[in-house]
Length: 224
Ligand SMILES: Nc1ncnc2c1ncn2[C@@H]1O[C@H](COP(=O)(O)OP(=O)(O)O)[C@@H](O)[C@H]1O
Ligand SMILES: [Mg+2]
Image (cartoon, rainbow, N blue to C red):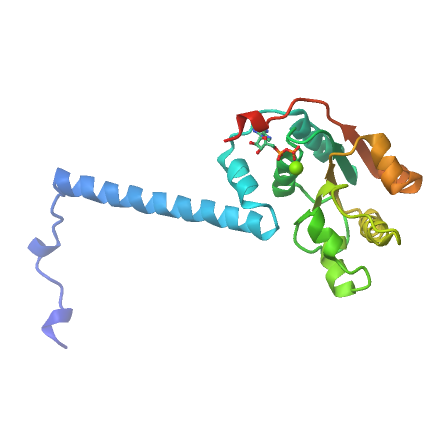
């Protein structure tokens, strides 16, 4: 056995007290490390939201928590509380619909589906319109997303053959069937919405949820 394995003399074992400078340095290092970990967690959270499709500018605003209470935010809170399946947020440009829908997506909870759902999705209308409704592999993640935002319905090109209308109906039908929640934002008023998508679509939306028309001034004047 080597001498190194033997117990050291008592004098070496006695703990030396740290000097105040050492204490301060250790505390500062600790604080630094905690701050870095907090920042990393926060970045991770923002990346997760961006991965759902939420635009980075909205991720930033929501994560910063600088949200004033708006009718749009109240409507999404009420939707979450009532646990209906669909919410249409209709209102003029700039009244906070996209912000409220994105924030809802980050906080929504499951409604009791028995599916193993796909990740939450935020879809700008152009992304939805690009989908091929005959391509099951592309449709399924949208139809079965745990929560879905369709942002700016009404801004899409409406073809004569009704391709978009069928696509939208297919997505919504699947989501009603599976009890998966959707928030739709639109600049259309309810009469314009009805004229564009038809009686049947509007009735089904009403049957499964609410169509909330937001009045209200634009928040864009206070653009940050
Ligand atoms: N709850 C809120 N608190 C503070 N500012 C907001 C809030 N919601 C939206 N905004 C501001 O208003 C602007 C428009 O919001 P947005 O959600 O894009 O409106 P919409 O989708 O109705 O056109 C945003 O860029 C943001 O600066
Ligand atoms: Mg918007």
